[in-house]
Length: 436
Image (cartoon, rainbow, N blue to C red):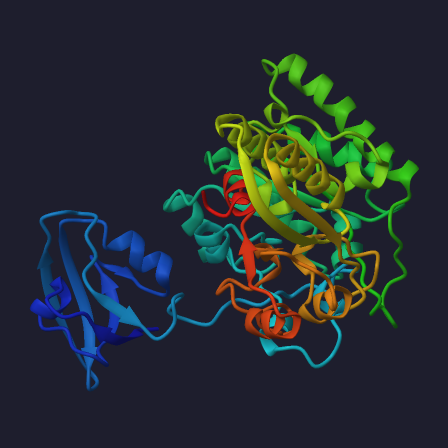
């Protein structure tokens, strides 16, 4: 199906070739164009032959580029050039199903799009992957692909994801591995369902696909207070979280012995916090392949912050800072703040733990903090010079929280300058010191 061209950039290769707004792109160098991946892959050549349609009539234009990687200036109505692919599963642990009513529409959309996996690191389940898309991943060598596996037991996967194809599509893991497609995988663990011996089985099966499988992340199921009518799940106990870590450590000890010390599987930071166990050092996480899954986030922040702190000269700093965070990161930020205050006389850093009343107190990560909780729990406080908040709690535009409360609203309500800070140790220290 032809893709409609929304606009053509001035002075671009496309404009010079006579392509116009509203033309429909059919193929490039004989390859039919369906979406952004086809388009981006096919324009990587110095010589291009484009088949287009205008007013129902097909025609061709030829483009010769001086640089094969140069863009040709065609823009489309959406970034993907078609509709985003939605999820066909009804997973027992789906977070979207646990959202309260009345939030913005985009928060209820369940994406399961292989293109977003490659472009933005989103995780896909493979159940929505058609044969053409699977083969395209291989032909274009789209790598790495981030895959939500959850379990390598086909029948259990069907039961957990409520999709009769969920077990069969695991064959694509072998297919990708045979064609040297790298994969980062995740297991959302639910107590008594896919942990214990099932976790051991999944780890051993995924290990057979190494080195194509680059990493395995185990994360605990996230549960909100909005679970009426949903599958009965519960959070991990301290002992159960500890058992998950022990199983992963046991697996890694065996795996690394036969693979030159490599570590393949990682428990998320949340498991260590639930188990009340010390987090590994930054060196443990290698290339931090699973940061977006909350794996190694605390270790990386601590390592970056302490390195930045060591590089700063000891001096007096007349500044008071307040930093608000979720329960999970509270202890770490207190530790880092104390280290900074010990080095810089006159610096005061006050860390405030914000409970997640909006989603429920079992949700402790900073990324799910809401504006209403910040407003209710921080009112009438003395913030000093600035209030720092985790940038991850805001949408990509860094302007509003999940509940649509904006930074400007928070700032006006609390009467303080509110600054979002990325999970970056150097940036955090800079904000403590006021940019000096």
